[in-house]
Image (cartoon, rainbow, N blue to C red):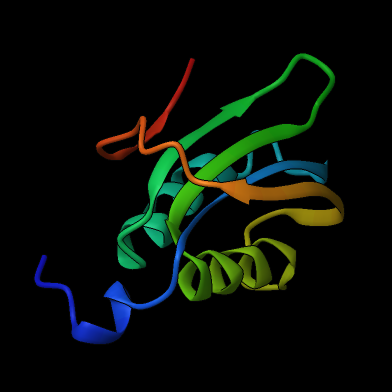
Length: 101
């Protein structure tokens, strides 16, 4: 996928999020991967035993913020009740965005 110049602007950051609500068994992880790939982000998404979904995403700050907005929006599948999150400097440890089992 070709990246446009605006996708390269801004410092790279890491978003760690725990998504609560009806977010398992509704395709949430797979749509999250699709959105992250659309934004050229790297990271992981996984279901946790407590019914939440854990997300780690890295990329340019503006794109990570757009991804964060999407996580909270009606565009995300299921029903998101709450997102507990933190943003820090990116580590660069990921080369793609994947579902972790």
